[in-house]
Length: 232
Image (tube, rainbow, N blue to C red; front, side, top):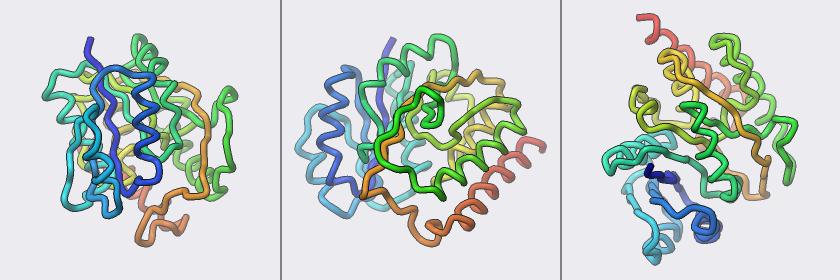
């Protein structure tokens, strides 16, 4: 059984080295870093490492796009199980073995920052919590699942199951398309508690998506478009 951690990275010079060091403490498989057109010192720091595979994109193509590239590379090299996590210090690498173990009973294991067992480090911005809750309610209403966190980027996948999903959304709303496709394919999904870790340097969504209602409208447009394609 071969495993890989796939990490999309964009302008994470402050945290990338420490996070990758921490991943190495808890995981001995392949680490695939997709540098999504970083304009800070992230490429310089990544170039100094010999323990990760680096894909350098000349232009930013988006969170969903970077993940798809990482998925494709993992499939091409014969990876059986994929863990995805962010490189901004908000995901605890010590949980990687737990995610892989949980795949014995599911196709997708999704981290949740809102289960009773989930710890908290720092305060989650209220607008993000509210939008996550609204979106998660929509997902559960359609799928019949009982998710508590629709947007955690800390996940694990069986590669065979992931390969059955056609994903096209390049941006932050890609997880919503993922849930539609997973539901359509009858994949099994479970959640694993992870900490809510928020830092002062918490990232911007860019452009006009920092406005909560515009961000929610974008999420719903991707969700509804994916559902319409499912009905065709």
